[in-house]
Length: 454
Figure 1 (cartoon, helix red, strand yellow):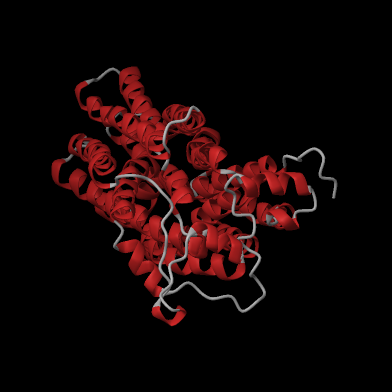
Figure 2: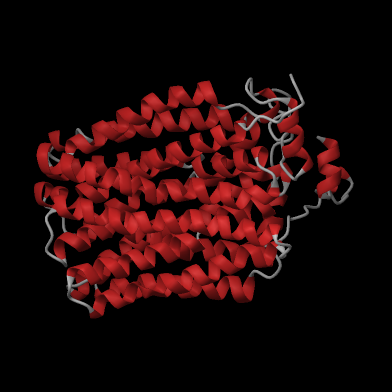
């Protein structure tokens, strides 16, 4: 290994995270694009569709802590590859539910969405672990924002394509095309992803640069040995930490906004605004472009503030609070009738939500080294309870009021609660220091000690 000039393999790793998250979110959104056609073909009402939308979330939430534990136990590469392959297979199978009778098809669709959620559970904790291992602290906000912004890019890239597929060939084909794409990508993942010290393309200089500047390059080195599994006492310590609880509440609310766009937004455009599914597919991509730009910008601004000497707390909180205040503008859609103004306010709301979606950077900054995967899993558990509640609550709101007006108020309120959480509850942002359980003599592990130990 030459050590004179550092390589930049971490950017290739970031590209892989961006691509896998794009596929991940496209597979989540398939059901939204197919939603109106599904309702017609299978005779599903708004409440039933809300429950089908939520099926992903039930399993995704339930799988977070086991998924985080698997990542810490067996490493990011293998667990994530299996995750990609499995969720893609279940996506393909959704394309065949129309072969059954109506009631069987509804149950099969719910179960397959549930299994997609379970298989995707390790994905974002895996992203956070890989970013913590491959990126120094001052690059972590941008790196996290880039992989997180893939959720918007997925809509930009795939919503028009999926809308066209539904319009031209029928809703079944959306699931088959997207699932096959994911299966192919799981093989590419196995080839390209390695931990920093094991990567054949990374030289010693790059690994040293990452390690010297806060990157946890040895995170996966214990794999293969009988490493200590994450302890339940560690989870208790995270759950009694005020900063982490504030971060969890904030992420729940931010995801509430995300899941409106991932589930009900195309239905809103078709049913409330009278667009065709083809037009809705293209229109849905416009707010997503703004969300993508906002998502990358939030991370860049945060890291810029950090490099300019501002505290980690200010550098992370300022974009989050400002972005989410802008996001609450979604409620203005209730007061305009002109189509371009509706799309404009949606785009502004999604841009603000993108700027404010820095939760994963905060997780990479705060996760204890011993349980980086588990900590990400716990964070994602709380955040994705919104993937269950949001589609169901909106389904009931639409069913009882006959319109989307109060649904948009509900989405805007989520943004304001997240602002409150970061302003009042979170406090200073810093890495959590865990105390070892009494079996290890009750000694406190500091960041430096744990780094030396590894």
